[in-house]
Image (cartoon, rainbow, N blue to C red; front, side, top):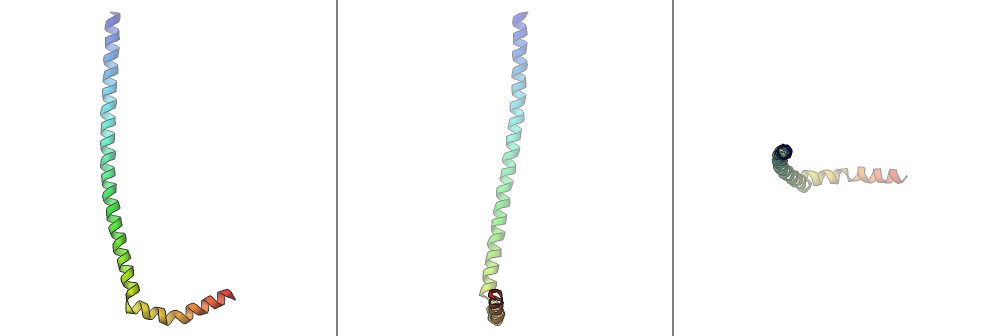
Length: 85
């Protein structure tokens, strides 16, 4: 009877450990899926950043931008002089 009680306790413990293992595996699989989604999201954001940088570069290289800088040069210089006061 005592031996059977020990066996029953061990079987319950094995079942508990098996359940914990299944939960841990499911949790790990869920986190792995989240990580995969995050990698995709990071790649998308990196592409958006690259496009934005290219767009900004094109804007800075445009004739309109360059003319605007020339036209606004006196204003920028005046601000600088006034700040130094």
